[in-house]
Figure 1 (cartoon, helix red, strand yellow):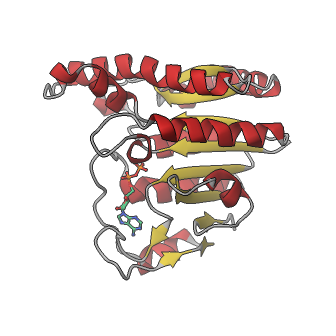
Figure 2 (cartoon, helix red, strand yellow; figure 1 turned 45 degrees about the vertical axis):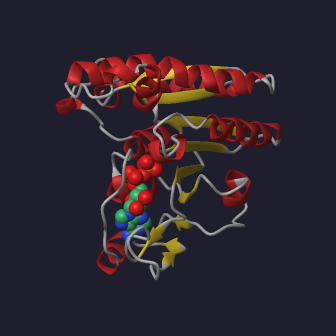
Length: 255
Ligand code: ADP
C-alpha cells in the first residue's frame, strides 16, 4: 500500500488570534481517515504544540525564556494529541505518538527502533503522529523545524510521498504574501536551478522554518526517490486533491 507522510505547519494549525484551529484538525482527520479507508497508510508530522500551550496558559505568553518555551510545548503537546485523538476516534482510528530528536536519526539502534515502531503502527491501521521532543531538544541540538523532521521521517519509513501543508499554494518566484503578481512553480525537477530563479522572503507569525526548510526537505526526500508536494492546508479537501494532482500546488520530483 502507499505510504504518505503529511506535515502540518504552525500557521496552518493556528487561528489568527493564536489559538489552535480545531476545525482544521477535524477536517484533516476526516481527510486522513478517507485516505486510510482507501488502503493508504498515513503518518502525520505535526507542529503547533507551543501554540496549543500558549492558548492553554495565557498568563505565560510573554515569558520568552527557554524553559518556559519547553514547558509550553509539553503542555500543548497533550492538547494537540487530545484534539487528534478525539477526531480520529470518530472514525474508529487510533493514533500513536512519537516524540523524536535529531540524535535519534543519527543513531543506528534508535533509527531501527523508530522504523519498526512506524511500520508496526501503520500496519495495524494506527496513525503515527510525530513531533520533535522539545523537552530534551535545546536550541543548539534541535532539528528545529518540522519540515526537516518530516523529511527524515519519510525517508526512514520509505514513504511513497511527502506532503507539506502550509498557508500558501506552493513555491512562488517571490513571496506571495508581499507580491500579488508572484507566480506559482508547479513542478520542480532541479532544486538548484529553481533556487536561482526565485526570491525567498520572510515567513510570518508562527512559522519556524520558512520556505527554505521546505525546499531542503524536498532535497532530502528526493535523494531517496520520494516526491514531495507543498500545498495549501486551507484548501478544501487538499489531501485528496494534492494526491490526485487536482489542485494548485508545487511538486518536487526526484531526478
Ligand atoms: P509553516 O508554518 O507552514 O511551516 P512558514 O510560515 O514557516 O510555514 O513558511 C511559509 C511562508 O514562507 C509563506 O507563508 C510565505 O509567506 C513565505 N515565503 C517566502 N518566500 C516564499 C516563496 N518564494 N514562495 C512561497 N512562500 C514564500
